[in-house]
Image (cartoon, rainbow, N blue to C red; front, side, top):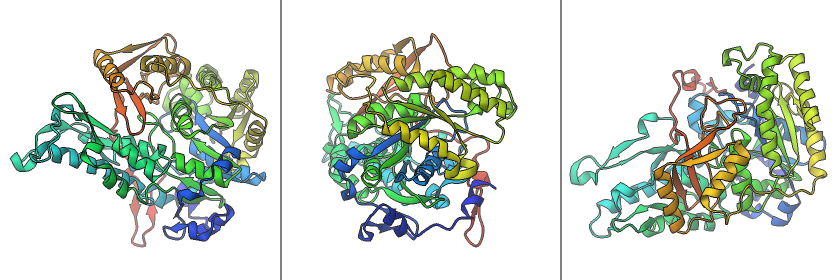
Length: 555
């Protein structure tokens, strides 16, 4: 059976019953139908947050289809509840871009899924739409001011950095010209669209403490420059109040459930290759206030999601995981051992062994944060006993605990061994994570430390435009912000063709952007795009709905 057929076999509990498991008063549940609810921020209790054990799930460098972090997160959360640990999974919301593009939905797989799967993948509670509207309201205000004669801020149209957003993969919108139609159409200028997951509004939602903090951050968004070279911020347009009003409901995290009726909180959805790649601080702290354990994930490999989780989110929120789960798969390791994508289901112990170098690089990178690492081997039906045994033996030689994870096939029952390893590691560590860099380090030093410590790079090269932008941001007083490097998820380097464990490579930073409201600098490495395109055969071709409203083709 496919994922959607499996979810249709399970009748969800009413969301009030899931809330009762977390001791949430019924009056605190804001119902979106029977199986979804929003949660108020007053449920956050900093004392309980400090007592809860946070577990981060990350992965090795993935194949194009991904290695099952969400499936592992859900299976592990179900397993933790089975062994008597009150546990909540906290996840990101799916973007319609991947849903209709290549990867499909983002609610797990097999018997380790979050439900209602179709609703979560398609619109959910409207959070992404609210973020998109807040982003585009600011765009409209910018163009209105440029065209205005009475209240003009003298914004230089050539220097506007802010782009519109849409939650869809649409390469035709990457670079556009607006303002056609003469004086009634406004001022002609070049601009473009980012996918909503890459919008700074999304980043701000996921880093804000509450609605007041959200509004203040909106006001600090750096839009570009005036003709005299001075900066323009969203507050100069008096935009933050209306933008925050659009986010009144969207800032609240969403409560749903697993197939085994355990609680899941889902909120926010920034990508990790172009943003910080993790759910909201509000969602994570809500889960930690209500549970003994919280299992969360960070997007793509540990070089992207985990690094940003530690150096940006944990710093901002004042939290830290007790243990990191590193997801590895036989197929990905064979891929990094140079086996073609079309042949990954064939047994090949030699290619597997060659791919171990990628796993080792990720372990080294994660250990730089000073926390214990547990390896979860996400098992696929094509994996052979010889391959699994060889990988387990290698993990043993590395001195890193590892367990086979059968979450897709067996749900929580298939992750019991992993759950025991995670609980043991979390309950027996007093370690605090070590950031990769100090906030007082110069911007270039921060970039170099991440590239060398996490990616294994030799040098960092800045283009002349990047050097000028770096100087400009330091002059504006942003030198003490953390960095959020945008680069390919397909390689530890900035070249997606360099699989495995690249050696003796440089990272080239072609430009820098500033997310002043979110509070980080964005160095852009390689040809990373903030508006993806659809593949030749998009997933949308398989999605359909019948006359009774039954959806098919989601996976």
